[in-house]
Length: 251
Ligand code: PEP
View 1 (cartoon, rainbow, N blue to C red):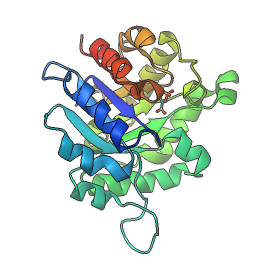
View 2: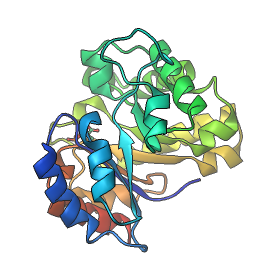
View 3: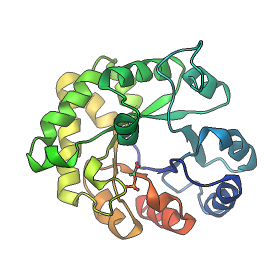
View 4: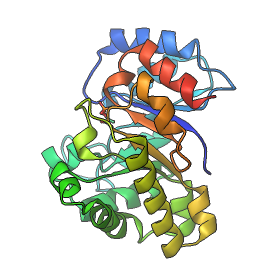
């Protein structure tokens, strides 16, 4: 279902003390009227944080899951294991996983499959690197990511997912996409989903933007017709910055 979402991707940052402080500050100010707030801590602290959090308005997710269902895969964490501890969301296809851990569109399709089978909602990340943007081939690039990972799933499954458009050149660089660039790509993704499934499915899917989103640019990005909120990396580590972004999305 389409809704306003602000999600914190902490990556491999914050220890349990820092995370608990963050949760105390953010948790105290996220309430019923807020947009949907998701937090993606490292695996090791998710259950502790879930136990600590007394409220109902922050939902926890995992930053990754294995593409395998279970078995002899040392160091991996399965979608079923995540679901068994009450996790609802999992990020799949973040550009850092694609780049540093060689995750291909095909492997990501397998991850989506096990995640959906386990009842998790994928936050599927897509987006083009700088060279592709410079060649003005970003739409073809993102279309291929959608086709090879997403479009094998049912319309009902896609309608429930969150798609995060994250241009790689904007992640962690301080250089965000302009509102026009973000809107153009979000509208394109929705158009492709409408073409593959239906206008109705396209109207239901939430498409959020990620890439150097901060309190001072969140408003113009979130005001775009097809931008349903943000996946926030760096700025999510600071409770005040993250709260300021939530405030913008909740207007
Ligand atoms: C991210 O890693 O998903 C992200 C959007 O990072 P940042 O906000 O730091 O660019």
